[in-house]
Amino acid sequence: MNDTYDVIVIGAGPGGYPCAIRLAQLGKKVLVVESKYLGGLCLNWGCIPTKALSYAAEMTDNFKKAKRLGFTIPDEGCNINTLRSWKEGVVKRLRAGIEYLFKEHGIHWKQGSARISSEHEVEIEHDGKKEVCRADTIVIATGTEVTPLPGFTFDGHHVIDTDEALEIQELPKNFLIIGAGVSGLEIAVIYSRLGSTVTVVEIMDQILPGMEHEMCEHLDKILKKSGIEIYVDSRVTGYIRKESKVEAAIKTPDTQLQRTFDKILIAVGRRPINNAFIDIDITTDKKGYIIIDDTLRTSIKNIFAIGDVVGPPLLAHKATRQGIVCAEIISGAARKLQSQPIPSCVFTIPPLSSVGFTEKEAVAQGYNVNIGRFPYRASGKALAMAETEGFVKIIGDEKGRLLGIHILGAESPSLIGEAVLALDKGLLVEDVANVIHPHPTLTEIIHEAAENFYKKATHIVNK
Image 1 (cartoon, rainbow, N blue to C red):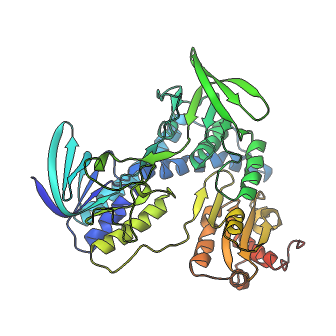
Image 2 (tube, one colour):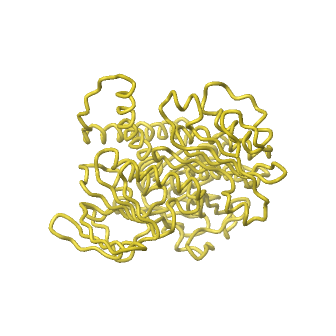
Image 3 (tube, one colour):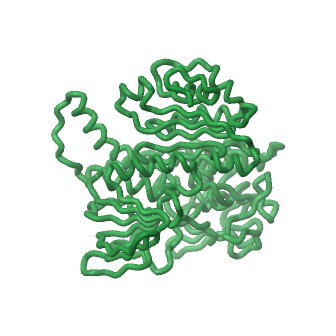
């Protein structure tokens, strides 16, 4: 037995490391165990590198807009090595920031694989060496991993996962992406903008299954117009290697296609990483996600779980919130995890951001739904930015209760913050309409959509 701590946190992702920092702020002696790098999946292979590359991909559109505005900019393409180095630099800087915060807060961390061997003991293995640490409390924040697709074997070259897709060595001329969820579409846009011919195949009847159908239909058209080939209600039934390429069979509702690609990306979802708790009796659901109560406790009272390992939505900001609440509960606060609106943002071009009920969900819940809409093309600021694609959709009931807001368009991941606040505080659609929004800004689109809910928008014909 080497060390004893108040709390051991397993996993240093967006749930684990904020949890550790808050625990240290509250006076706890904390050990964090991370199998790879500080920051976990989100910082190293997910949120941050994807958004860094998405930002770079937007540059291609910005160059086109600049030419329309009169600037003379030569189109010489992108140096992939420079782009990759820049992306890695962003990741390393943020990772170093976490390490600095750990040092300043007196948080210990060990790199290695962790297994909970008893209610108070964690076995850590690294480079063939094992040690056992003890703690009063354990927090599991191990996250998720890529779900494999039967019949497709990851080989790191022809068939790759989302982590490998972000380590751009060279651009595939023809790129097949299986899965039109968040990761699949974001990577599709990145590669398409950088010069690949991209095909996306989705088994469900819309891209981004589960998100607002009307917005997804509109985004589908925009992505196709930009050159991305998308097949929904379709599947890849098999593939064979042919020299340096792969030939895939795609079954659509109308036909059977045989196409040749340089690479295939599997982006069909994620599953919980449960290696850390296979030796103890922690209750999980049928998919392997840990079941927790409203204090984030597992079936073992002194063991907590947070983040993706407890199930959808698999979002970094949800994990961070759970990590903070968990730390405060462990430290003695009489708190419970509250049900709060959780926004979702898809960093396509343009991005799609949502919070609250979709129209279909609201109807299914028994609400008499009313809708407010306002297009980007009617916004002075959007026109001045040459960003006219998209619209805002506000969902409420006949009493004006706000149920959901969905924004497809430029800067929607930043704009959705207003919607989250409005929903969280129980505001009416009328409250949003009555707030004075600055002019000229994109926030006015939300205001006008709220006015349109009452058929009172002043910059469109209300229908």
